[in-house]
Length: 223
Image (tube, rainbow, N blue to C red; front, side):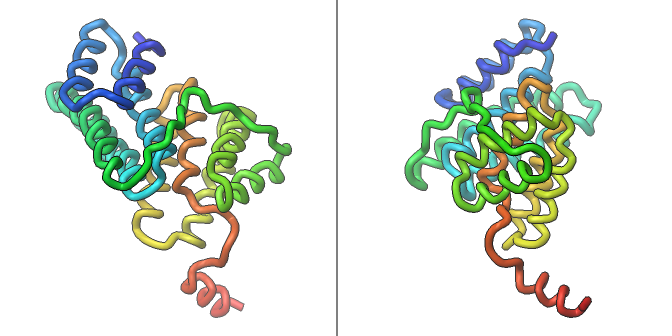
């Protein structure tokens, strides 16, 4: 059965537990009859929260790793392997958290406590989100949460995020990160997917600044 309380248990463990401890918790939750979906909700939400707490190379890999392991989970029929993938994902996230400590301060952002900001309606609201991404990611996350709540199928948000990645992405991480998070939005339960999408702005490209030189060259070639 789906169990939001179990999701929150997993999320709390990602903040403080060790690799073996959180794996043990996953086993306990499964043995209680909780759906694996509730565990995945906690893992994806925890990945997003780690990125919020310390944007950067380690934080973004919490989401791309979870994406890869979920893909493997969905594409094997071997039940034992599926169980191992759940345990590995949970343990990896706590190891990423520890790796962050060598890179500086880890913030106190809490994805479950993120609140939506006031947002203009329609296209103006969407542009406000991505303008904020370039200058204030914490506020951009609150704006993105408001947008997602007002647009249960945020296809325009996803399209805009992809276009900005193509125009302004600087390296492979921009591409693989955006591909992972925009794909995984649909893998979360409705109660958590909007918060996950909001957390993604901590590593998405904003609308400010110039386009990549190759984009400018292409524009000139086509005019």
